[in-house]
Length: 276
Image (tube, rainbow, N blue to C red; front, side, top):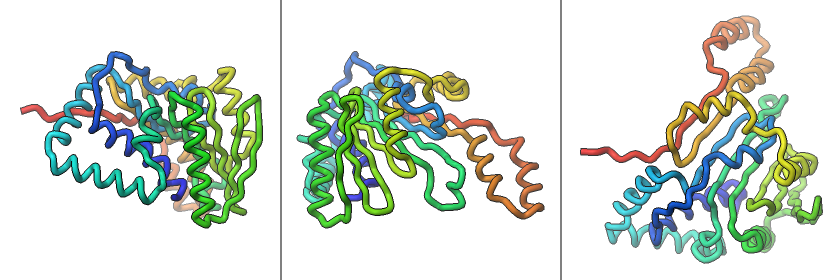
């Protein structure tokens, strides 16, 4: 299973699995706590809170009830879960859902040369877990499945501050996995071990993070109660994009338009039902 598919599946099964036993709880999880664990140069951020405030929990419960009340839809969803379980080799309902959450997050860093090389942004993924041993077992099982499936990867182990790190390399790209502080941490190239170490330091010791960015806090303050949010540093994106423009007329047009662009963008993940 490709790396880009595995982690979205965790969120998919968090939502689908909720169809078979979701209850509204007063044990809510404060939003965007993973922003305190993302390094301060994080340019893009998206998070989903699986234990939001009461109003969003009720909206979520009503949405799930509307689906689970239809036997045909519920059966189709069960069939879908069974199919993905069979193809992935992982029983998500048994091996993932019991410990998943309360928060899942993606952070990305835009870096100089990104557009020129076509390598894309530098991602960091955090998946909340209430059982670090079970989460570690899942990561190792998934890597073993990739090896058994013939994926040309090599694995090696590192230890930093008593945290085990699995380094996955296919000859050109690298992936780094660790379980610590209640999260699965996954970092991808062009990041290196130094960035993994810095993230572990932040998770253990605290310090400057995306959370401290005034633009990020302004974006948070402008959004109502939610299941999650997104944030994007548009100013940095435009700065890097401008460095790729060589034609003087194109640069003149770019410079004319950029003053009208917002310095940052905040996005809302909100559940809302249409009332009659």
